[in-house]
Length: 102
Image 1 (spheres, rainbow, N blue to C red):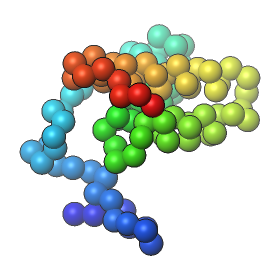
Image 2: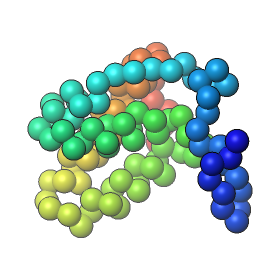
Image 3: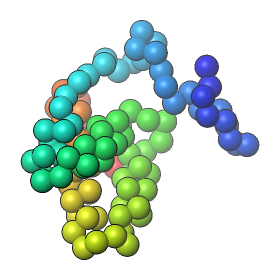
Image 4: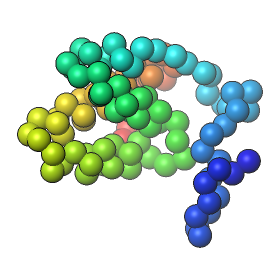
Protein backbone atom coordinates (compact mmCIF):
# COMPACT_ATOMS: atom_id res chain seq x y z
CA UNK A 1 0.00 0.00 0.00
CA UNK A 2 1.75 3.22 -1.09
CA UNK A 3 1.69 5.90 1.55
CA UNK A 4 3.69 8.52 -0.30
CA UNK A 5 3.02 9.58 -3.86
CA UNK A 6 5.12 11.88 -6.00
CA UNK A 7 4.75 12.77 -9.67
CA UNK A 8 7.77 10.51 -10.24
CA UNK A 9 6.95 7.32 -8.33
CA UNK A 10 4.97 5.70 -5.60
CA UNK A 11 7.05 4.50 -2.68
CA UNK A 12 5.89 2.02 -0.07
CA UNK A 13 7.95 3.48 2.77
CA UNK A 14 6.36 1.40 5.53
CA UNK A 15 6.53 -2.34 5.21
CA UNK A 16 4.65 -4.79 7.36
CA UNK A 17 7.06 -6.90 9.47
CA UNK A 18 5.87 -10.15 7.89
CA UNK A 19 6.60 -8.71 4.43
CA UNK A 20 10.00 -7.27 5.28
CA UNK A 21 13.26 -8.85 4.24
CA UNK A 22 14.94 -7.37 7.31
CA UNK A 23 14.17 -8.70 10.77
CA UNK A 24 12.58 -6.29 13.20
CA UNK A 25 15.20 -4.96 15.66
CA UNK A 26 14.94 -2.77 18.74
CA UNK A 27 17.42 -0.76 20.78
CA UNK A 28 17.41 2.21 23.12
CA UNK A 29 18.08 5.29 20.97
CA UNK A 30 17.58 7.52 24.00
CA UNK A 31 20.49 5.82 25.75
CA UNK A 32 22.78 6.56 22.81
CA UNK A 33 21.49 10.13 22.66
CA UNK A 34 22.24 10.58 26.37
CA UNK A 35 25.81 9.39 25.73
CA UNK A 36 26.11 12.45 23.48
CA UNK A 37 24.58 14.60 26.20
CA UNK A 38 21.22 15.47 24.61
CA UNK A 39 18.10 13.30 24.57
CA UNK A 40 16.88 15.15 21.46
CA UNK A 41 19.58 13.40 19.45
CA UNK A 42 17.50 10.23 19.72
CA UNK A 43 15.67 11.24 16.55
CA UNK A 44 18.94 11.49 14.64
CA UNK A 45 20.12 8.17 16.11
CA UNK A 46 16.97 6.54 14.72
CA UNK A 47 17.46 8.17 11.32
CA UNK A 48 20.91 6.63 11.20
CA UNK A 49 19.56 3.25 12.29
CA UNK A 50 17.05 3.09 9.45
CA UNK A 51 19.28 4.67 6.81
CA UNK A 52 20.54 1.37 5.35
CA UNK A 53 17.00 0.01 5.09
CA UNK A 54 15.40 2.63 2.83
CA UNK A 55 14.89 2.61 -0.93
CA UNK A 56 17.70 5.14 -1.42
CA UNK A 57 21.35 5.35 -0.28
CA UNK A 58 22.11 6.18 3.36
CA UNK A 59 24.22 9.10 2.14
CA UNK A 60 21.06 10.87 0.94
CA UNK A 61 19.56 10.87 4.43
CA UNK A 62 22.91 11.72 6.08
CA UNK A 63 23.34 14.68 3.71
CA UNK A 64 19.81 15.87 4.55
CA UNK A 65 20.61 15.78 8.27
CA UNK A 66 23.84 17.67 7.61
CA UNK A 67 21.99 20.31 5.59
CA UNK A 68 19.43 20.72 8.38
CA UNK A 69 22.07 21.47 11.02
CA UNK A 70 24.72 23.21 8.91
CA UNK A 71 23.55 26.70 9.88
CA UNK A 72 22.62 26.02 13.50
CA UNK A 73 24.67 26.62 16.65
CA UNK A 74 28.31 25.54 16.36
CA UNK A 75 28.70 21.94 17.42
CA UNK A 76 25.16 20.82 16.51
CA UNK A 77 26.22 19.61 13.08
CA UNK A 78 29.03 17.48 14.51
CA UNK A 79 26.85 16.09 17.31
CA UNK A 80 24.09 15.15 14.87
CA UNK A 81 26.49 13.52 12.42
CA UNK A 82 28.02 11.48 15.24
CA UNK A 83 24.52 10.50 16.47
CA UNK A 84 23.50 9.47 12.94
CA UNK A 85 26.61 7.33 12.58
CA UNK A 86 26.11 5.79 16.03
CA UNK A 87 22.55 4.78 15.16
CA UNK A 88 23.72 3.32 11.89
CA UNK A 89 26.46 1.37 13.62
CA UNK A 90 24.09 0.05 16.30
CA UNK A 91 21.60 -1.17 13.71
CA UNK A 92 24.40 -2.83 11.75
CA UNK A 93 25.65 -4.56 14.91
CA UNK A 94 22.16 -5.89 15.64
CA UNK A 95 21.74 -7.34 12.18
CA UNK A 96 25.34 -8.53 11.97
CA UNK A 97 25.63 -7.07 8.47
CA UNK A 98 27.84 -4.04 9.01
CA UNK A 99 27.07 -0.66 7.49
CA UNK A 100 26.61 -0.36 3.79
CA UNK A 101 28.97 2.27 2.38
CA UNK A 102 27.21 5.64 2.44
